[in-house]
Amino acid sequence: MYYKLISYLKFLIKSTNEHGVHSPFVFNFVTKCLYSKEKMSSNKTMNVLLKSIGYFNYKKVLIDNSPEVEERVRDTFQDMYFDRSTVDIVYTDHMNISKFTTLLSEGKLHNGSMVLVDGIYHDKKRLEDWENLIASPNITVSMDMFHCGAIFIREEQVKEHFTIRI
Image 1 (cartoon, helix red, strand yellow):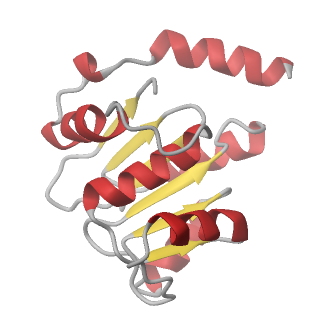
Image 2 (image 1 turned 120 degrees about the vertical axis):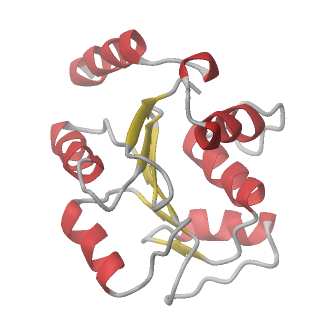
């Protein structure tokens, strides 16, 4: 509990809202998706996932070991493909550089893919894995939202990291 409280206070100090974002892609994502009035779930990570699927019009999703999340996505978006080939968005509760590299090498991720990682501040190990992950040259945009983290593969964009309050 103490670790999460200290982590949250540090997050609040360095985080910003849409006014601190100078990337058009991230600014639009934050203002038109994350900060939209529509609330699809009381769980912040689930809300980000569902809003992102709708905002980007993603059709192919990979849900990593979470039947409840998969069921919620199926109920909300009937035209989704839960395919193990190339995917638009990956949801997982833990992502490290090895797992990410495997997804890339297997061709599951493409330019425009998003990976949403739940609980990046769950413990020190997950935060360390997150920090190693966002340092990868294959990830050009990363967003720390405390409850979750999002990474994007966008070859056309300069590497940037954002800390956003949601």
